[in-house]
Amino acid sequence: MIDELLSDADERMDGAVDHTIGEFATVRTGRANPQILQRVHVDYYGAKTPLQQLASISVPEPRMLLVQPFDKGSLADVEKAIIAADLGLSPSNDGTVIRLAFPALTEERRRDLIKVARQMAEEGRVSVRQIRRSTKDDIESLTGEVSDDDIRRAESDLQDKTDAHTARIDQLLAAKEQELLEV
Image 1 (cartoon, rainbow, N blue to C red):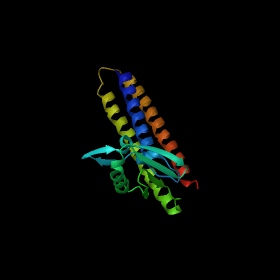
Image 2 (cartoon, rainbow, N blue to C red):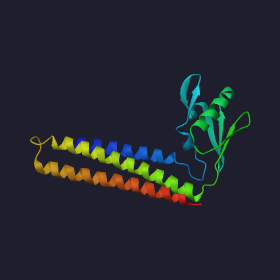
Image 3 (cartoon, rainbow, N blue to C red):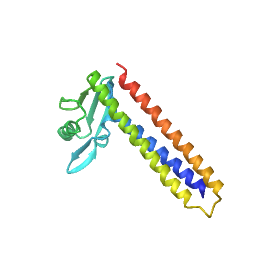
Image 4 (cartoon, one colour):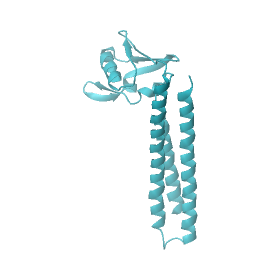
């Protein structure tokens, strides 16, 4: 029973770390990264549709994204959705594709993006700690069914897993900060 609780907590913590990785991917750096468009949803015939389902996204140059809608009629809607997403990018429409040029980041903008990344990392750590808290409550509810030594051992293992996952988030944050600071 305890092993099941610990393995479930480990999987959920892995999920929280994966979510944080996904969040970090949406933070714009000086380079073109298709992941930044992950949150863009286009109003396509009355339905909010993810941009990835409506267009191919490529990186022809290090500082440029090329968005080519499968349906040419949706080009204006895609452009509006990119503008509405407030990514700090100005789309350039030539009638068949949309080009997104990534301007070089200013020092002030880099600092702002680092603050955003730190907030995302903190949300990831909070999520991991909430998983620890709920699993710890589940383990403590087994009092009487399992020995106190087993409960203490399980809580210690749970804390080790929590520490490992928060350390992983900290490593990811340090890498993201380094990426944001490089010119």
